Structures are given as structure tokens and as C-alpha cells.
Amino acid sequence: MAQEKSKDPVSTILEGIERLAELAETLQQKAETFSREGEIDLSALKEGMKARYSIALKTVSGGNAARAARFTTKFTSSASVRQQPSNSASVPKTIEPDTDLFVEATAIKIYVQLPGVQEKDIRLVLRGDILELEAKGTRQHFYKEILLPKPVQPSSLEKHLRNGVLEISLWLSV
Image (tube, rainbow, N blue to C red; front, side, top):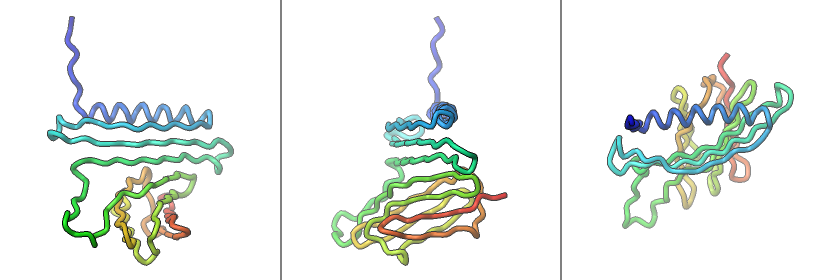
């Protein structure tokens, strides 16, 4: 009997993404919802390294303009956790905010929960296909890098903060 060769973590992740894409296509046809949370062991890359994820996918069927897919993802890694000084009570805790990303026919809409933050305290930087968000509230410091699923027009970035929810709009590249 042949012994099955163990897969490297990157191959496992890529296979999972492929299965997720197939599921998204099925969900889009049926207008359903899918969600899953878990942890990926990346010890083969670096001892003790793990990644946590949470994925929610909700599709809406209808006319071409009404089709949208909602992706909510949270990836955290022990390597990416920012350490705060243990003796400093005045330093706000850094957390990754909850984010919803919608891919529409002509734009990407991103909604970010930022309680206790004022619009003037929000910094957005677009670097290629990554949108970096940083916001400082009175008690919390928010930070997140958002991978954009499609190319966008950098000059089209708009933001509006209402009731602790930041709405970011980016036009898709032609």
C-alpha cells in the first residue's frame, strides 16, 4: 500500500480556497448563506505558527445590477499580533475591526465597525490591492489590512463614518 505524501500548508490553503470558490458559485445560483470558522496549523512554516479564520458568504440573486456577494473574513496569526507594553495602561488596545466587503457591478463597498472613533482619526492607505486601515479611538486602536478582490481606481476612494460604521467606496478599474 502506498503511503500518502503529506501536503504542505500552502497547498492545503489553496485547495480550501478553490473549494470555497466552487461553493460561492453554487450559493450565488441558490441565493444562500455559508459561514465557517477554524484554525490552520502552519507549524511546517514556522514552529508554533497558526492562523485563525472566520468566513461568511451571503449571496443575493436578481438582475445583474442587484447581484452582490458578501465576504466577511478575519485572519489572525500569532506572528501578526502587535504587542502592547504590559506596564502602560494609557496605550489603547489594538484590535482588528469587523469588516464586510461587497463586490458590486462597478464598485467595491467595505463596511467597518469603528465604535468610538471620529472620522478625522481614520487613516486609509491604498497600496496596490491592499487597503490599510488605521483608526484611533479613545479606548481602542483599530488596524486592519484588507485584500481587495479586484483592481480599483485609487483616486475613487471615498469614506463616510455614520454611527460608528465606516463606509468605504472604491470604483473598479475598467
